[in-house]
Image (cartoon, rainbow, N blue to C red; front, side, top):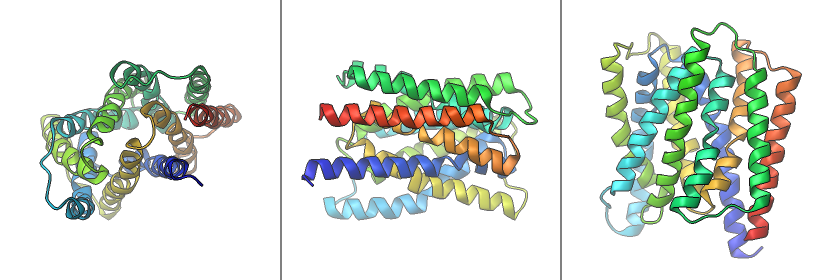
Length: 293
């Protein structure tokens, strides 16, 4: 296999694994027993030791620790906003709805990549994007909400989080031009953690998990951040941002399935059909990227 194709395949596989890992995020958020923003704080802070070890390996190759750039700090701000809005959505609405709406970021990413990175999407890619987003919408519309505290507000906050996550994806893509994925993750997490803690304090949230299960859920969030989000950050330096955002639509389909199994938020036949549409759109979009490359 040519080296360029092998590198692209590795990036796509890493992105798929990362998307599958972060599908567990809303499950862990529900299980922490803390406030939504506090759960985001634990996700970032508990990930710091692992991220520091990974960053140390990369800086050893570079010969020195590299200072954070403005883009890495901006990535931390955008990711903190994304986690804050989305975690409240997960707490107030169904996992499926919150995750689907948060993953409508491709709409923003495609336009942003076109304007900022000059990555004009091919027609075939746009067809795949529309198919994947349509499938995601079907999954969200058909999701069983269970006992939700405030579905309308949760859905609205989750939809807004898509904007912040789109900005995060684009900023990480820019930051990866000068820093490794682990360095970007480390500095952005160091930036985002205190912001989330401060917001949690202002909102009067429960900061500390109430039991061992809550602490294990927080540890799960930290692991997801290191391995899941880290794989995504690494892949963003190797494939177009718009293609990456579509592949990540695997996450909501898996999250809806997990919510069905764990929280008895049933996944209907219509949701299954929506999941198939999502995967079909991902495949079509990736085919467009391969043809163009």
